[in-house]
Length: 258
Image (cartoon, rainbow, N blue to C red):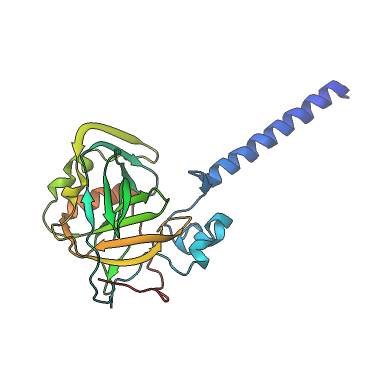
């Protein structure tokens, strides 16, 4: 049986639409949060060792000479400027972004360091820690991400070691979103200053974001005194996110201070 021209045209159009939809699905699947897909799985082909290859936008992950995290060892003893913390309580807005558990911070909190003001945007968690101290990791690291009016980034790192249950994490841990892209807003307020040690002495160096696109020029301050967290608390966040730490990067010619 012969098909009419109209029937053939319909077949061609239908096939073209299906091809287009398949292509769109493939592109959508390959991209996440506006960029090429990446993860921490060493066997996926999208893990840290491949970040610089999976997208041109991420080439700094491979080619950058001032990457983070690093091993915080053999730091020079200097007098570092005091960090002025001006943190207020925030509503508890938590998101599982697929790579980390992140708490969005309300406007109005900031730090001042080296006479520059950096506004607190969010904080999130990595297990185990990304920075090492003398080659050894902590079980968890919290990153507080700040941005200045000039667009400069400053990140405060807080390390956690196994010990007693950290009750200041309770409200966050009780509301951890279990699925990627899931959000939870809770009618409570927390102040992240309660998740920091009393001593604010720190290691200082210039590095990068520890996730793609691995942008450099980030002012890093990693507090030297760790906090405690229970094994159960670590197990709970790892059961949701898994291990999400980037391996340490070469220091190259940078100066590490404390």
